[in-house]
Image (cartoon, rainbow, N blue to C red):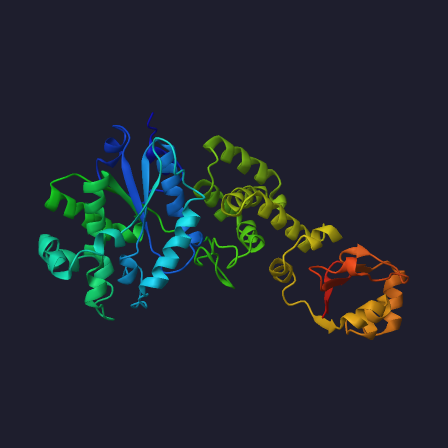
Length: 424
C-alpha cells in the first residue's frame, strides 16, 4: 500500500517547491522517482543527507527510488549555486568516486524487495551518444531564451559561464527524459537549487515524449547562526570514516544548537512525529542533558557507521568530558585519540627510556608537563594525577599494558590538564 509521501515530507519541513499535481500522481499507486548525486569526491557528506533521506522516505512510502550517480554530468559541472567554474575530473577518478558513493548509498536504501532501490549512472547512456546526435535530437527542443532565463545561468553571466556549464541543464534534463522513458520515473527530487534543472527535465519529457513528469525540491539547510550546514573548522563532515572519524561525526550532531536540533531530528532521523514531540518535551525539561542532540547523533551515526562505531564515539565523548576509564582510551583508534586530544602538549621518549621511567620523570624529569619534581610530588599526594584517566600515586610503575595503541600514555592533572607521552 502506498503511503502519502508528500505529507510525510511536509510535516518534516522537507518541501520547498512542488509542481502542481505531484501529490495526486504519487497517490495513484507505486511510482518511480530519482535524485542525482554528483560524484566530484569519493565520499558524500552530511549536506547530501537531506536528499538521501528524501529517497528513504520515498521508498518507505511504497515507491521505487532510483539513485543516479552522475558519471557523465560529473565531467561537465553544474553551475547551480556555484560562483565559478570547477575543475573537471578524468574518467578514472570519476569511476572511483562513483563506486565509493554507491557503497555509501547502499547503507540507506533497500536494494531488495518489490520496490527495490536501483543505482543508475548517466555515463551508461551518454557514452555512446555523439555531440551531433545530442544537439540534433535533444538540443532542438529547448530555446536559448528558455535556458538563459534560469537563475543558475543568469547569476553567472557577469562573472562568466562556459558553454560546457551552460549546457548542463540540458544534459541533466535528458537524464530525466531517459529515466522517464526507460524506468518509468515520473518525479525528480532534489535540493531547491536544482529546481531549474529539474523543470528543464519535465519540459523535455513533455516536448520529446509527450509525457507528464513532476518535481519536488527540499529547502537548503541553514544553521540558526547563519553559518553553512555541514561545515566545521576542519571542513566538510564526510560520510567516509577515513575523512571524518565516527567520533567527529557524532560530535557534529551533538554540538548542534537546540534550534537546529529541533529541525535536524525531523529531517535526518526516521522517528515518528509522536516520538519527536516526546523527545523535544523531555529535552525542554532538562536542556543541559542535550537529549535531542543525542537522539539525532545516535541514530545518524548508527546508520552511517554502525553500532560498534557509535559505541566507540560515545566512549570517546565520555573521555572528553571526564567520564571514562583506561579501557575506553585503549578502545580508541589513533585518529580518534588525536581528534579528542587535539592541541594537547606532547613529549617523545624512547622505548628504552620508557622501560625504566618512573612517574616523577614522566611528569617533570623527562617532560615539561609539570614545572618540577617538587610540584609532581605535591600533586601526587593530593591525588590529582592520572595515567590514562586513572588516579595514581608516587609508587606507580609503567608497563607496556599502559600503552594506548602501543605507543601513547595520557597523563592528567585535575580535570582539564592533559599531556601525551609518545613512546618510540
